[in-house]
Length: 99
Image (cartoon, rainbow, N blue to C red; front, side):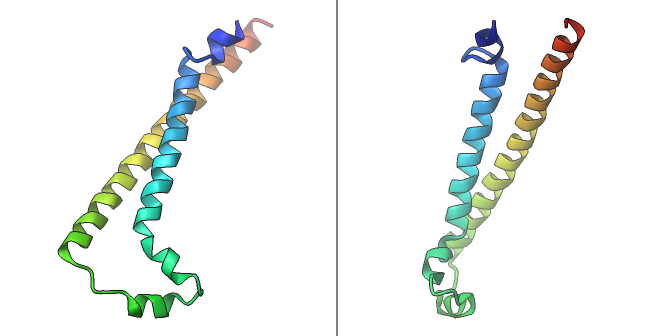
């Protein structure tokens, strides 16, 4: 019974897996966007910023693409989160009504 509610073939499992994938994608994109973070290990962001080369058109396009992917991932995460919340609320309601 519980396998049908939470197992690999359930909607809750698919939504949880989607949330995990969205979080990994968001982390990956955020690391690409903050690529300067590794060069700021000394902790002085202003020096690292001054030492950075001027962004090229390619860098600007990559940043815009990454930011668009980040926004898309955030929207997907929020939708999956709301759907999972609704699925769990439905399960709680069903349990309460049959106890």
